[in-house]
Image (cartoon, rainbow, N blue to C red; front, side, top):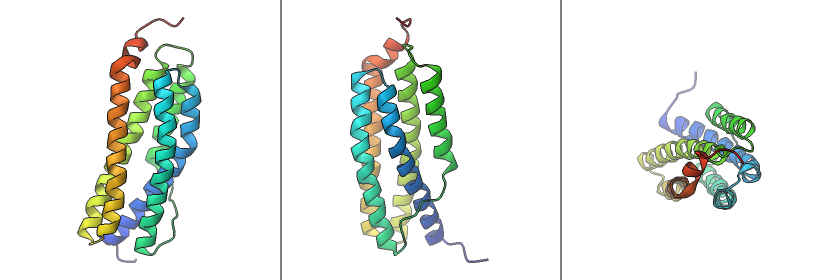
Length: 166
């Protein structure tokens, strides 16, 4: 059995979030189409571009560690995205749809925040300052997206979810 080190764990976790980001990028257009609120649609559309940039930064981190940019199936993101799909289907056409989509999106953001926070810390411990800076840039972006989604929820989406479907 090969030695399992923090380097190995860093690489495995990097592959996990790389897979997750690519999967999220494929899911975001469905969320744009499903959302009813113009603000929520715009937030999802904005995040498509951000996610593309995040994938590019991950590819740079793979370059820094001298490994090919490859993903490894992330069961956690598969489950979170499946829940989002379920909400989109079960609440389609209801006032609660956007609140459910928003909650699903925040579950994704929170998962990403934990991954990027951990990877950044490990990169620092491993002496990879350039990788840590790239990971921190994405961590800040994900945190801001979570804050923006909360603002959309508080501004209208949650209150609108209490209304009866038209």
